[in-house]
Image 1 (tube, rainbow, N blue to C red):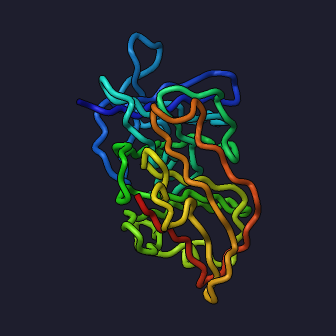
Image 2: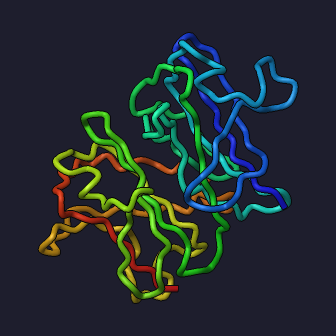
Length: 244
């Protein structure tokens, strides 16, 4: 039973692009989503930067579709620069959703730029991956994530093992979103916390970020951004504590 991730994008000249990977391996690392579709007037199986070189992407969103089921939950989607760093997040939802949202900033397509996405099985579980995708006011963005542990405070880190504070030190979060693939949320049994939370080194609560279940059985919308600015210090962290 294959699970696909699709990305739909619009460019500043009014043209559109359709990306799809129809067999994405589950997990937070993600896989590239290249041009796809059936009988569409565009080149197939090419990285987004190469396929649309010179165009400026202004809008995009991603969806997850599992063959014969609605249990594929999006973890994250985004554009990556040629050096592998993130350019911008792409909001991700379930099988259906409402709008083609604007990117946090327009991005010019260049050779080497790629679109990526990640998913997991939505289930009644305390041990799914929780993710946080943040975008700072200076244009920097990064993804942190962790597999939750039932009733244990767990810190999210990026692919290199850096904490939120280490990655965003001295920066101000401008917008961000979080996901968790549990059918009944992070805290079904009530002894954990029902959202991800950002703490200062002294334990002071600096932010609360609801984690959406971006699956086909969830709400018919993309995972919305939180747009409350948060200044991040080097020793700040973002945590989750599931209980289900």
